[in-house]
Length: 350
Ligand SMILES: Cc1cc2nc3c(=O)[nH]c(=O)nc-3n(C[C@H](O)[C@H](O)[C@H](O)COP(=O)(O)OP(=O)(O)OC[C@H]3O[C@@H](n4cnc5c(N)ncnc54)[C@H](O)[C@@H]3O)c2cc1C
Image (cartoon, rainbow, N blue to C red; front, top):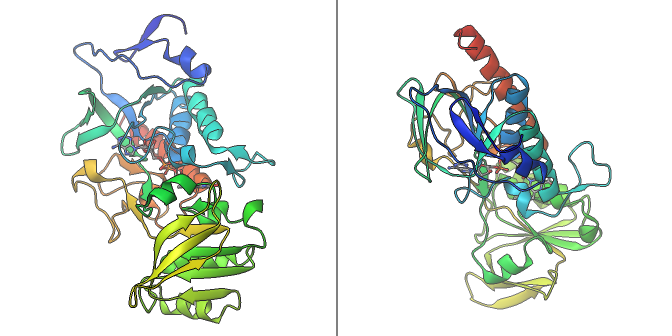
C-alpha cells in the first residue's frame, strides 16, 4: 500500500510498507462517525497475538492488534529479550528471538492486520460493543477481544542481573537450558516452588550439577516434586541462601550468596543461573472484569480460549500457568482467532 488508506474508518499511513521493511510503526488513527466497531481487537503482539492476528486477517476479519508499548513487556513480547530460540518449529538452526517476532508481526501485516503500538489502559466489558482506551487516548469499539498480554517473569532486582541477563542468566530453563553454553557445566536455579524444581530436573539433562538456591529451609514445591529433587543425584539444595550478586564480566561466572541465618557470604561458581521466582500475568487493565485463577492467570473454558465474558477470549501466557512457551502461545492464538470467527458467524456479525 502506498500513501494513506482507510480500513473500517481508520486512516493508515504507509504502515504496511513500513512493516514490510521490518520497522513497526504506530498508526495515525482518525475515526469517522458513525464508526463501525472492530470485529476483533487483539491486545498484545507476542506469539499469541501475532498468530491470532494472522488467522483473523486471513479470515477477512481485518483485525486490529494493539501491540503494547511499555506495559507488560514490549511490542513483540518476551522473545524480544532473548537470543537464539532453538525450539520453535521450522528453524533447524534456531532463530534470533527478535527476528522471529519481527517476522510474525510482518506476516500479520501482510494479510491485512492493522497494528498500533500503544498500551491498553482501560477496557469496558459490560457494554456491547466492548470499549477500549489506550495510552495515547485512542478509543476502539470491539465486537470481540482476544487478550494476549502475556505474563512477566519475575527477575531479581540486581544491577548485575540486568547486565548478565541472556549472558548466562535466564528466566526460562525449558527455553534456554539446552544451549551449548550450559552443557556439562554447573548450573543454579533460584526459587523453591514447583517451577524451580521442574526447571532443576529439566536442567539435569544438560548440566553436570544443578544447585537449587532457596531462601528458606524447605521447598514450597509439592511433596512429590520435593522428593524427586531431593533424590536426584545431580541436584544439590542450598538452603537459607539469597543471591547477593551475580559475578562475571561478560558472561556469568558465579553467584555471591548470603546465608539468611548467619549473614555469611560465599561464592558459588556456576555457568548458568535460572530465575524461577514466578510470573505475573499482565491483567491489570482488566480491573477484575474477567475471572482469574488463584495465581492471577485468566481462566478459560477447558479446550477453548473463551473467558468468563462472552466474546472475550484469552490466548498465550496470560492464560497458561503451565507451559508458557512460544509455540503453545501461538497455538492458543490460532484457537482464539478461529473461535472469534465462529462466534461472529453465530451472531450474524460477519
Ligand atoms: C528470556 C526468555 C526466553 C525465552 N525463550 C523461549 C524459547 O527459547 N522458546 C520458547 O518457546 N519460549 C521462550 N520463552 C517463553 C516465550 O517467550 C513466551 O512463552 C511467549 O512469548 C508468550 O507469548 P505471549 O504472546 O503469550 O506473550 P508475550 O510474548 O509476553 O507478549 C505479550 C504482549 O502483550 C503486550 N502487552 C502487555 N500488556 C499490554 C497492555 N496493557 N496493552 C497492550 N499490550 C500489552 C506486550 O507488549 C507484548 O506484546 C522465553 C521467555 C523469556 C522471558
